[in-house]
Image (cartoon, rainbow, N blue to C red; front, side, top):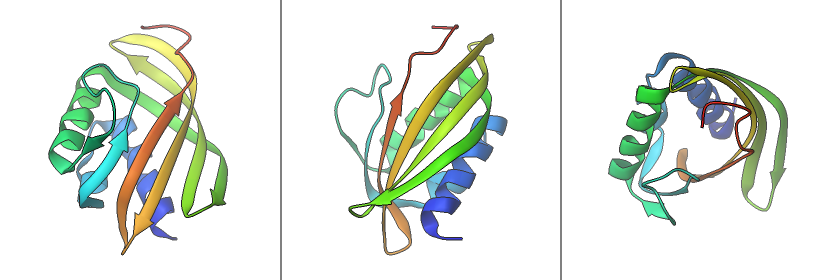
Length: 121
């Protein structure tokens, strides 16, 4: 299993349990990320903002993620994912694409692209 697979496995576990510690431990100190979430406009830098992002998910999200496909190219690994669960206590289902850039065994960058949930927002 490579680092991108490990990161995805930790993302799946975090969404299911609210415990993102294993994924956070895999982030490079200067991780760069972009997520379409209020309070995180633009490109974010560093583990501390990433921890705040994941803490927000812990408070609002419990979901089962199923990887549909893995795509590799141009130094990136993307996972197409189906998401089903509870968001702010309401059922939802959506598709998600997570993109990881790995360097020296760490997640150097991650980006999240998603379709609007079918409910809950």
